[in-house]
Length: 461
Image 1: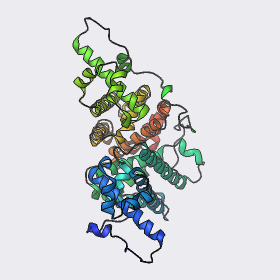
Image 2 (image 1 turned 45 degrees about the vertical axis):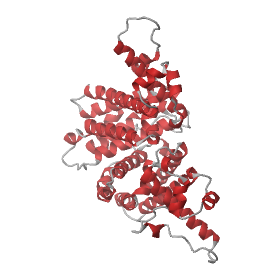
Image 3 (image 1 turned 135 degrees about the horizontal axis):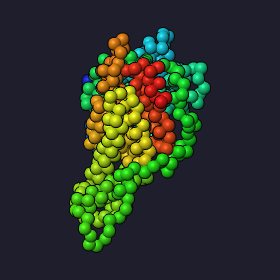
Image 4 (image 1 turned 180 degrees about the vertical axis):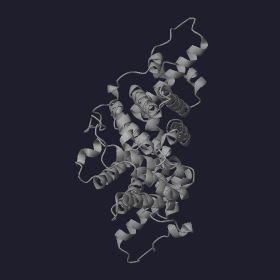
């Protein structure tokens, strides 16, 4: 199992070969050892170089196995990556669930699970980075494996947390998904910044935050689409199209015209970022090409290169546009209620969800496709989440009652949890349902500061 425990001080010890020749070892033991060494090797090399730069030669050399042995165990490096990911995910889930099942109060069990997760992340940062961050350029299968693992973990914790609730209850109660999403985001940020050692010290604050949400969701907050089969309310069901998208849709008149140059450039840029977002949403980032972007945007290749040197720059441009517009509509709604912070948060979140539903391609790009892009895309995302937390949630400390202790990590955790819920709905092709989850997200954002009862009142308005 890759990185199941801290690495030995000497790299050679970690990848030590089994004896060659007639050694009398069980063939299954030999194969298991070879698989573990290869899985450890790919985790280490991804952390060092990135998935795309890892070669089969690098893997076999580091793991001390031959190329024929590699191909006898795995078809290619993608299959090895998925095997390594699944091993890490299964171990992580096992440790967290076993800790959660210890005897004690709900808060004590939650604390044990979060602490176990934090300690594992601090001890094995490379392996945990692969689990919570994925591998840039690894493709859709890796993301799918990550999502399946998280979904299984959510279902297990929900069953333990709410044993009397029906099994399908998790589909309408987003609390567990939001809490796990918040913990994941806090963990991911420390792993990216090389600050994994801080995580065990945050366990108590994360526990205090998570324990503040009652086991039973208050009445009137559950979403209206409990089953939500994949694609049942997909991107085509968006309630409206944004003004920005409508503005960029039409062609500019050909030939001589009196349109100002600034307007022309803005329109062309918007068509390029819209085309980029649509292609990525439909085909994935790996299938994005400049000729198709130019064709869909109705611009020449020369015009494209005047604005973006590469297709990756076009992707980042589309991401910035999507993020900026999403935060802008939220800010405008929030400012309209700036004298009433809870109502401002509620109005802002509702506006955000309406915008995301009206821009399905851009929503997919900023909330889903970013994970398969590059560190630059993640940095843009992180800055946006930081702005979200600072602008809309930090003011909650002024509204919190004196008897409520709200840890400093709470705005970051709430923001991460909300973003993970949005990611889930968009990736699951249920973007048309996003406006319906507003009450639960408002409740999640306000509960740590106002308490569950008052937060639910605001969310139900």
